[in-house]
Length: 159
Picture 1 (cartoon, rainbow, N blue to C red):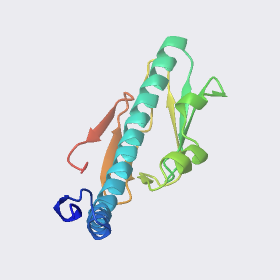
Picture 2: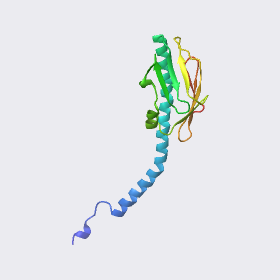
Picture 3: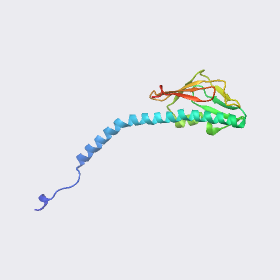
Picture 4: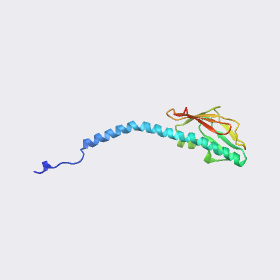
């Protein structure tokens, strides 16, 4: 007759199911924002990679005293860097890399078609394009390349 006096410990099946249902609903609310943040972060990495590769190309042109060429892929967010005719894969962005790492990114370049930026031995280029990078959720970054090879990121458009 002592069974009625004992306290039963633990959770009932209904309590567990309610808890899991609430956790699932909260997860459904968070996932879209998390995906948006990840895409925005990846696009930010791409936006920062281009000026780094441009600075490297300028440095190579000045130190090696030979022209360094960066060919922009028009509206595809890709570029190819070559020093003395040899392509530097480390400082280029191929379409395969872009598709694998930054799948939801699009670019527009002034002039639209592919452009070639050639750094002379003093580190200057003749063309100075403006590139607009857009992420999947509409965030935009504007990169303006100067004749000195520097890149200005328009902070007013980054969101």
